[in-house]
Image 1 (tube, rainbow, N blue to C red):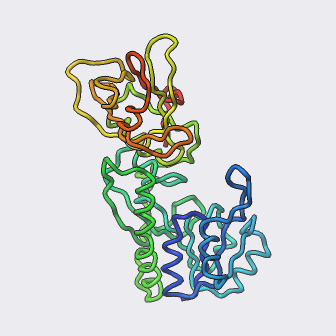
Image 2: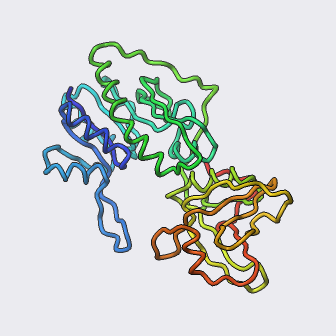
Image 3: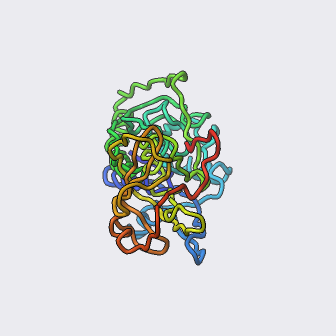
Length: 328
C-alpha cells in the first residue's frame, strides 16, 4: 500500500519503521523543528530524526498548519491508499480527511482515556489493563470508530515511561493488521460507547504533586504515573524547625507493610536508609530510586548513606497538592 504517515513523537517511530518495511511511504508529515535544550537549538522531532537516519529516502514535510490549502493539495496529489496518524500534534480537518482512509493509533482502550495523556492517566487511576486502539479519524478528538485493539497489563512496578515504550512496541503489529484488513475489505468498525468515555487532559509541571494523606498505593500510582514527566519530587530532610530539606526527583517507589499505629503523613519512619514514608490509612510508602539535582539516578539507600541527616526525617511533596485536584 502507499501510505502517508503523520507523526512527531517517539511513540510512532516503531510503527513508521514497520510500515516502511512492508509498504511504500509516500511522505512523512511531522511538526516543524523546535528549540530544545539549554541552548535552544532547533531540534527535529523523533520522527523526523528517524527519517534523516534513513538518508533522506523518505520525503518529509514540516508544515506549521497541515490544513493549509497548499499542504492539503500536495498530500492529496500523492494518491495514497491510507493515512496513518500517530502522536502528530495537529488536528486534521474534515476537508483534509475527506475521501481517504485516515486512521490513528491511540494509547488507550477507547473510549477510556480520550485525550493528550492517556498512558499517565491509566497509571494514576490504577487501571489494571490498558492497550492501544486504532480508530478512524473523526471531528471529535479520539471519538472515531474502533478498527482494532491490543491489551497490556499494568503492574504496580511499571512507570508511565516504561508503559509508553511497551505500548509503542505493540503498535506496529496492530496498525499493519488494520491496513491489511482495510485492503482485503474485512475491517469491522465498532462505534465507541459514549457512556464509558473518560478524559486524560494534557499535563503540566504543576500536576507533579503527591498527597501523603492518601493511602500509599495511591501515592505509588501518582509517582509512577508521572514518571518521567512531569516527574514527582519530594522534599526530604529534618522535620524540626529550621532543618533544611533537599529536593529529590523520585523515580520509583513501593508499597511497604502497613503500620499498627497511624504516624503523621509525610513522617519518615525507621532508619534513614529504609526510605519509609507514612501515608494515610496507616499505610507506608518505600522510596526506591531517586535522582538528586544535577546527578544520576540512584537507589535510595545509596543516597541516604551519603547524605547528612540530623534528627527526625520528613518528606513532603515539592509541589503543594491543590485541594480536590486530580492530575489526569
